[in-house]
Length: 248
Image (cartoon, rainbow, N blue to C red; front, side, top):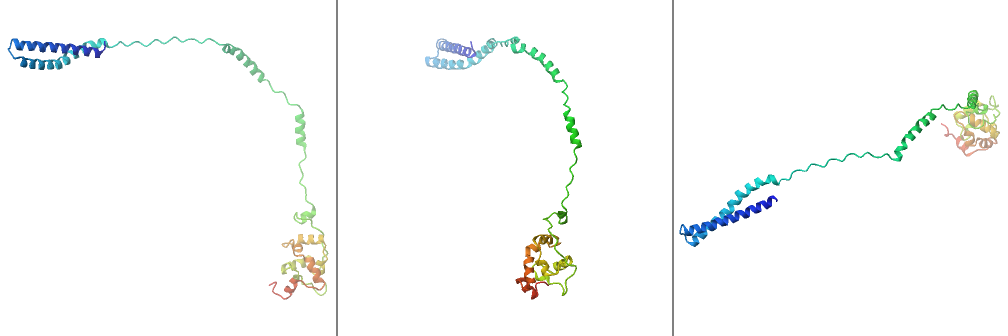
């Protein structure tokens, strides 16, 4: 039986007791006290409501407090844990000792010393040790003279001094200024016909040996200009240079 059922039964009993007391009060008021029916009925109804309100609060609460400990269920102990079940050894577990026995054998086999290398290695080392060091190749003499540039060519004929009548004005050749004319004189070149007679190899030699002016012979075509000037002709540049104002 639950607590709600107990409360409901107690209230029902209290209502029945209140009704019985109200009827008893109605009879006593009419017979003993000589009250009229309506007055006795009104008093009996009031007594019923008062008893119906007061009795459940006093009687039912006390009854529930007395019975409540009996209604509290006793806690059930937790189930005991099952005993651990030992796993049965499987076929794979049985084969482990055999594999473990094989491992020491393989470890012992791996510790064997490595076989010695053939003696051919020693001969290779000896050959490498006796190999002659590479010698530094020397450049040809012509290349050394020209600083490693193009072939030096052939040295043209030079004069120790100008012929009778003095040197030609080499500044009439385009590309030859006062400084370059002085350099040509120091090298032994004073006249147009000298320059006009240079071959290709001689032009290459002069181009390589004009310090500070390398390549001017080929670039300005000195030979063609010198041939024209040696024959008594003029070039466009020599016409302007003869009037002055080209070199200051």
